[in-house]
Image (cartoon, rainbow, N blue to C red; front, side, top):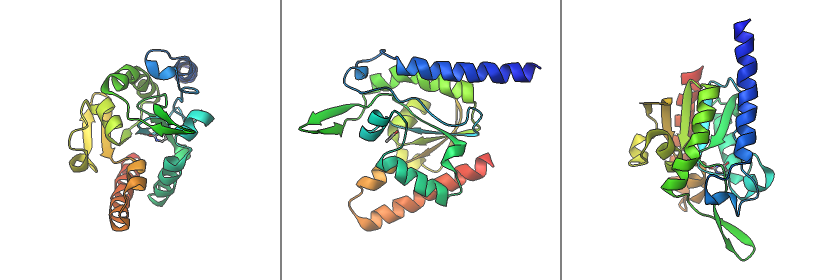
Length: 204
Ligand code: URA
């Protein structure tokens, strides 16, 4: 029936979007990066999780959130009752941006113009997956989805209505990993867990 035809069309077009993302040359980040990293997860996921950009590991492996930040996310999400494999996980920017320092590739934040260029792909993913809720992890995801990252620490934990549907703002797991103070790390990790619990409840 029509529903089946729509399901097939959606599957084909999400695969096609992933293929197009892997071939993207719309901004200069495609030069130095190993490969573009499209989103991954069920095409009918109720929850979409959006990060910043692939890290060093993701750039080599070609999958989102498989390095240290991804492991942190998986752990806290599981504690919050969110199975990562039930979410569609992606990034605001699909290529790793870095500065080479000797043998190390140091993460560089994407410019607003790069975020705006790459929004084309994020919007295509949102339009095809049609999640009930999008979790924006960190300022770059929040910028892409709401037009501004101002006041993220005050906005976190709240659900905002946007042109892309409801968006829950929270911090990025890398931010938690970078906090030097153990007490602060514990406090902000607990808040991050709460935000993910709220997301789990919203989509259940
Ligand atoms: N950080 C992100 O924002 N995304 C990834 O995929 C990995 C690390």
